[in-house]
Each structure stands twice: as C-alpha cells, then as structure tokens.
Length: 123
Image (cartoon, rainbow, N blue to C red; front, side):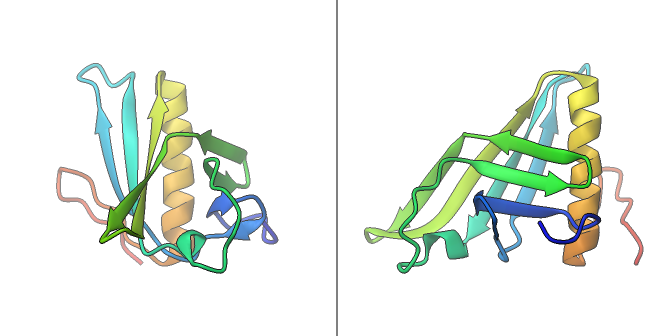
C-alpha cells in the first residue's frame, strides 16, 4: 500500500483490488462476536490473465492488516463471476478495529456508510 492513510483490500499481496464489494455486517445480540461478508462482483483478481492463487483477503490501512482465509468463488456457466469473503471477529476490540478499517475503506473508496438506524455518512 503506497499511501499510509489509504485503506485497501487485496486478494494478492501487493495488488489492490479496484472492485468495491458489497459488505454486510452482522453481530451477536451481546455485540461481542460477528461477521462481515464481502461480495466482490467480477473482481480483477478473477481476470483470466491473473494466474496466482487467491489465499485470502487482506484489508490494509494505517493500523496494519486484517486477514481472512474464508474466501469462496461463485461461478456462472462454469466461469468465475464473484468472490465472497467472510471476516469473523470474537471480541468488541476486534469489532471496533474492523469498523475503523471499514470507515477508512469507505472514505478511500468514496463510499457512504449507513447503519440500521438509517444514519448515513455525509461527504
């Protein structure tokens, strides 16, 4: 990652994925555990010219790297069409760290952020 203030997602170390995923976040009732499910439609990591194996999702920002190895491919008519990754946390601190990454990623990608309450991030 060249810019220390930028947040990026990589499937291949050193190669930023330009496709912005749909991200769904779920938490347990007590808020301690949960998951973020990322769906990347037609990511560049699945391009035919990319010959490297995808071994995980690397979420990089100024605090470091979050990693998940839970990555599954979606295929349509035998051709790769999407990647789905699941990041799981098991503590409130892990959740807060993920949310800091998510906010930086949204800011870096020009996205808004909304919660169930209907609040939306303002640009």
